[in-house]
Length: 631
Image (tube, helix red, strand yellow):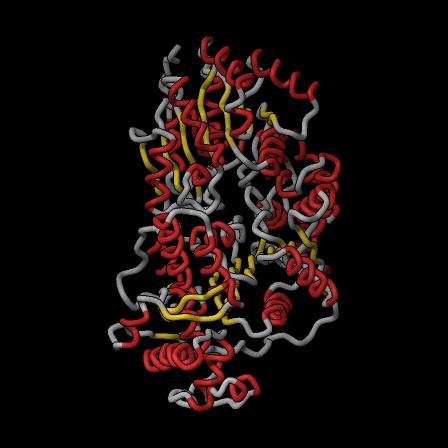
């Protein structure tokens, strides 16, 4: 059966936006997307994290359900996201449910019966469940009665082998196009380069879909990338100076490092929790719930954490290890500042990061074409880290977007624009490093690691250098003018560009490659940024845990306004606990701040405050007025 779509007017969609969600206007391309999909069009939506992707399918789902076209199926791999979005829709008065592994058999059966009765507007499910024969039979029944209104495939980059989070089960979603002809489909993602976009279109058969590509710029996020020198202490200084009492996420590559860093932060008086796959599932759930429901928690985690986390007030995301590619970096940093308020993305990187990432690619069982693509993505990320120009320009250029009016543009919200680094020509140092590796191999038939190669070039007579007779090499002491930090920067570039290979099976020793020749001949220039030391602290030292008492409002409030704001946040926390939901699902901070500023005395005074829809006005207005008056 093919559903005959009625014309759903722009006025109807605006009314849902205001009545259900409490917003007066659509943002960016939301209106065009919502109108296109509500009236039966297929869509590919690329919109940054925090840009309002959820409304792009929730509003059409409500509109089409009201028009008698049945349920919208939202496909997501993320249990946490399902729970939060269903909870938020319930708060807004929308009938929504999820089907996932957290439900008992009886609970799932009851939801399936409600689905068949037409009682549900939005149903969330994982791709594995959607392609299960039993579930497909349910969809068949709905389709035969014209009661399938929409398929929304969230995190659509998971379908692509070129994406940063490939999940093979997404490939089976082609069944939706083949089996349910005429049901509109939309694929949504926050992160996809040209290669990934093309793969999404091909794999999900969206060749005829209209593409809506928003700007990838997150102007509220300040990007800072530093060379590692006692990385954990650098992180600690960053949090203490810039983010006392703030919620944040710190990403580490290994489970052990997650636990060590979390403990270091706790010892420094910061409320930090670890999260990785090696922890008991109940512990992980408790930690995730605390992060979502409490204020000022710093989650130290592997990249398994964060995808689908809707928490809007994460003020910083820090990377203590370099990600694999720019897509991953962009996706993870995008978890900061979803509320549009100032946020920070901080990353420390070093030679060992490049060595580790390059080794993982080289040792991968994948085909050479795929490895080459991964190397290119790693090179692009290293280029971002080593960049001396605007980081935001570099980041957006990777996604095919131009920012500013050409070379020299400054965004004034990244470290390079605010503190332009000095540049030096590392070509001579690169040639001397390569010559040293070559001469070591020629003289002893052996390979050595980065530290030993740099010691020879800088003329250090260590026991190892002397023992192997490497003081006799023609390059011994030839690079005495270079610091170890400078040479490590040069080696990072050489490894990233493939001019030096790292042999993991031989204790991370270095060897030359075919690409070495071009550098040795002077055909390739190696330009690097001067190392910038961490600036001195602007703040005096603070006692451990002092940040927990800080009240920070997202807009300027006077003293009485801050008192009202604090009282509203305390009330919201109680309501959230009663409903077993994150606090931001009840009201966002920006909504509470607007209430605190207006100091409403009547129901009419609450009208028009962004984020207060009809259901929330009915449910909470009297309590809000009481809290404001008491405050």
